[in-house]
Length: 308
Image 1 (tube, rainbow, N blue to C red):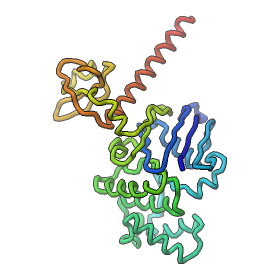
Image 2 (cartoon, rainbow, N blue to C red):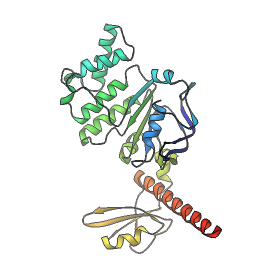
Image 3 (cartoon, helix red, strand yellow):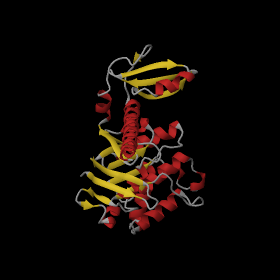
Image 4 (cartoon, one colour):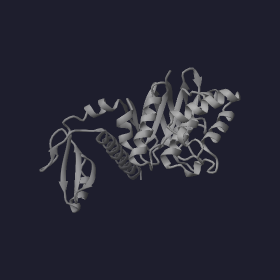
């Protein structure tokens, strides 16, 4: 069973086009959707989760038409949004039991067994009687997954799930997602490259509502082999380097700025070759997109000037 998205577009009433002809084919397992804030990730996730309408395009989950058969989709959907509320004075066990009732699990014995199994699976059974208001961020995220797993969903959507988690909770949460990916389609929407590189056999990069790249992470990295270069520079040299077409990223390291470039040959004096990683893939795609948008804007301006 695959999730197939074809030519999906969405424009909000204020004129902002959040999705522009998005097409993706997502198989069973973990799928990473990478992009900066405002790239269109949440709009795409909400549309797949039947929480908002698309203007154009189609989405199919196996033989289910997601945009037309919303109730059928919701029967097999688990959704953990970026932000979700809990009743702070209710225990994890009681609130999960309540959500199970809402999901249609009306048999008391069956529901009791389900709640116990989900709290054990998310490593929350030992704190089942504690009030949710006392939970840490990571514990709250794991509770959100427990809610999403009610009904054994075939499609699970998690939106920015590790943002704000400490390293230990992040690892625990990602391990949980990895286990779930063996039986379901899991879409991991995030701006954290490491989350995708560690978990996802397939991924896509989105920006400005458009898919810039869809690939297996290791294949995308392989295409950059022997083409990534880096150099430590002074801060006052950054502007000149950033204007070069080969420039893909930079970061502060030990008081210097380390710039990374993509080129078949050394892009200048002092550059040393370095191994590529998924972060280079991400920044290279974003850099290509920026240059493309700049070129298109310049061409449009020139065309207007010529017409005048």
